[in-house]
Length: 212
Image (cartoon, rainbow, N blue to C red; front, side, top):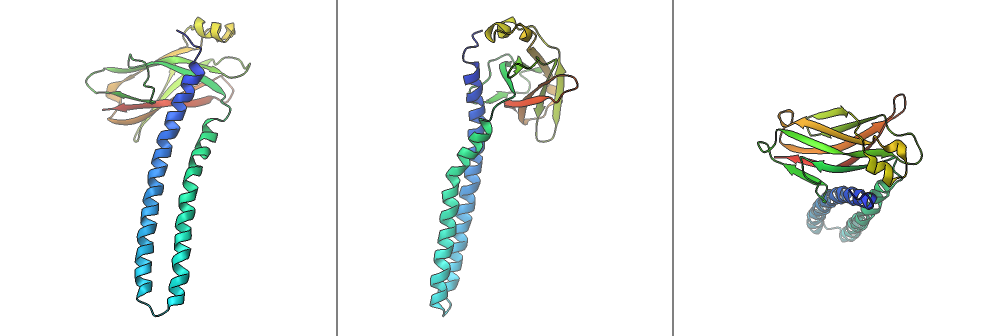
């Protein structure tokens, strides 16, 4: 397997997840703006029935200004999220397959109950820098009502050791299997955690799995 573009592919997955969150936040902002416009219209109508024109003139611009300020803040959501996502990572991980297929470039993978008996997830994970390799790796899937974590046996990955020119990374692979009977329909977040005994572990969200 060619690992030359692994970091770029991982960045694309993180970027997709961030974009999904941006879309959701943008939708909420639009809903709030619509509600504000509705309240403004109601207040303007009420003000038109009062004999105090000066007060009407004062209140309307204040509400319009508030609405404009809310709209102006919307684009700032993107830089905020991307700064979080682009902070220096403490681990590098890559998913080779989910349920027997390469992971979706969108970051969301879909499986159908009845089509699979098990949800398999395999890949590799290493710490950044010159730190000692992980001596354990855990794969976690978290849904709305349940969360399952499995500690997996490390698998030999000489290709990873060769790519990073570090022979100590030879045992950096993993493979986990979750019984479909353990899961319910819905969306699950896929997270990889790695660490060494006696030290704090590191984790990273690598995508989503939708069970239908």
